[in-house]
Length: 189
Image 1 (spheres, helix red, strand yellow):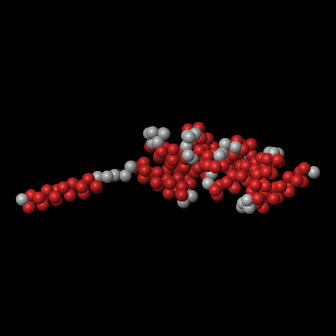
Image 2 (tube, rainbow, N blue to C red):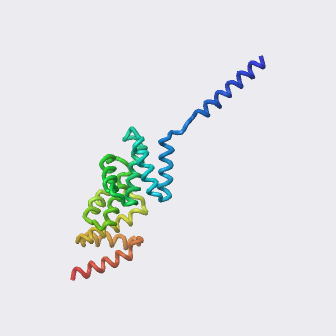
Image 3 (cartoon, rainbow, N blue to C red):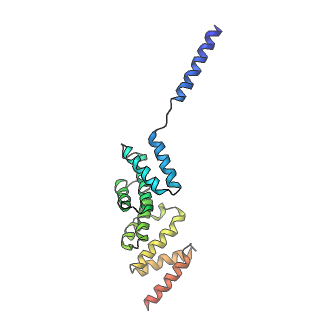
């Protein structure tokens, strides 16, 4: 009787061990993690390539993995200034208008145009952003770039209001704002 109980217990415990060894990792998740590691270490070329490969593997384009893949692929392309960067950023906005990453892509696309001094285009995306959706550290950056775009296109009244807000709050861009407000005053003469 004891031997039978012992054998039964041994057999029962071995079945758990075999079952635990059969758990496998999804190759898509492994590829995603590898691509994300590349992205987080600023290896954007490798990240872009790996996210592109992963994008081809994903069948359900509405799953969270597909959304994250498209997001990081678009940002990697933007940092690399690839020919399809603008297309990928806009495609993300079209494909995922309800994504929690929507405003982040708008900000990145606006900054992308801002860095190219395409202030008309940057304003289109700065104006879509809900300031409350931004992280605290992004708000002053957003406000300055938005105000500077307005200033560059001749909207001196709105830009001066935003510059004054940054000065009052003693944000990192305060000094630049003061200089631009002085230029604004000179333009009025």
